[in-house]
Figure 1 (cartoon, rainbow, N blue to C red):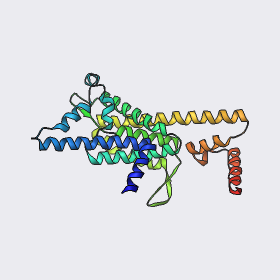
Figure 2: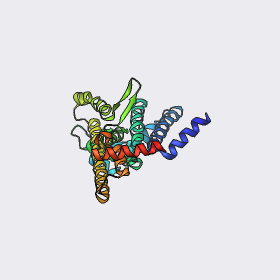
Figure 3: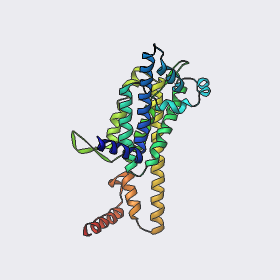
Figure 4: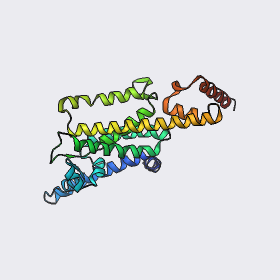
Length: 261
């Protein structure tokens, strides 16, 4: 038990994805604890009162009256499966971004995806007065898409695939799984929120890739040849297949030097 506590506390200290997950889990538990307290105290629905204060309303006028809900809604879930799926996506893809040196961007994309989802939710024609939104789906999908654009060819190993599969194909399956919802309910508020998260994540990923490519090009231009740091950054963002012949040669020479040591 002590080892488990140490593991979790270590993750919470060093991982933004785990910290975001912790906020979601605490909010989930708090809502259900309030629900239980309300039930035992005579049927007062305390959970509904708190949820009503934190959920995002569906019109511009209503949202402007409670502007904090643009942030709070993306940390609030009342359904366990909703929480589980969103947190699995956040942890898996957020951890990949952190390992690629983009730790700070996990929180940025989480918030950006949630805000983009909120805007499209409110703007959706199907969203009417009285409709509300809660959940981290848009935020989690933004992290998914950003990580995918940054590391499309990264091999991730699944239990049934020994050699692993490229991240872009795994993400394609996740995105494709949302198509039936669009077919059945069209451009509903929830679907538009998901779309907002995907678009925000893609925009953030392309921005980071462009910035990384510009930095690599500048470093190589100033030195006249590929740099080790530039090559490693390129591998992190685009995979080994993106290296030029000269970059492969430098990387091969570096590998041989490490083996001699």
